[in-house]
Image (tube, rainbow, N blue to C red; front, side, top):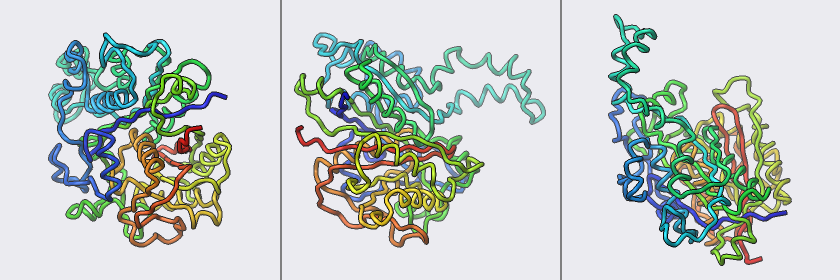
Length: 437
């Protein structure tokens, strides 16, 4: 069977514009959550989030492509930025890097991206909606007659979820399989799984994969507030707000970012002398059995099923897992359900395996979260260092996980990452330390 390895990483998060800044922030136990400044959150129950630093998207695309950036929304820009770093760090030279020195067969490169809830620019949409209002009520006929006419015909191209992978593949001239997956918090988990499968099937030698989402938008945050998923008690103390598995947790905190990795078949990576960062072993997917989408099923059965599939595909036993990076959203009911699902698979071992929730530092970056966790896992394995968890001062009742509250120097060979969505999808994957064989 074809083995799949990781040879490049790229990230943009509230910690900075690179994957190195992401790792340093997590390694040092910092928190990237701050008061929201990207819009005025006055009147919102929550007024905190994790915002990416300022950037100029023109610096991340070839000069010939800069006009096309007008058709990029925030989510697309984040994915393009992270993709450039991932490609550069892998040593691959594409058309988007230097078209005079291309060192790949573009027809053998796949693009698999996860995307989330892409919110419209209110400055564009607002005036159009206003034209469709009659006596304070939205009029669909007036919308068709007057509202739509004030929106540019290409407007929709900024908000289609497949446009993350579309722009990236056009910039770098990737001509292999191309797909987009929209499954909220597990979007990039699933995109990475499909990328690995494309390589193992022999359809590509290389795959650029990951996800991105910009949740620092009033429509997105209001949606989470309405569904009562946000933390509201810590507006004046943002660093303490997201508390996965903690007894004082009161909800999640949302952020923005993108994570991208370069996957290659082991044979191809070795042939070109690439630096290998880790090996991809197994993936699993399932679904929560909870009748509503508003919360996880109490016993976390969907999470357990995904973990079991990932371990089976990786062909390893639960006892071989050295670290678990859970979804850990900070929503008490869902954290307890995830904890129970993990415990049902690992049994008594669950009290010994270190657990590192990352959202307490990074916030919930939704479609980007799986790949960002993968990048963190790769750094942990390569440095044999597990950072301390943040904001888990006392375990919530019923949670039996071994939250790693102090920095730990340890040889980490296998990392399990899990994820779930508010729609019920669950996912898990296993990465292995590269030891040169």
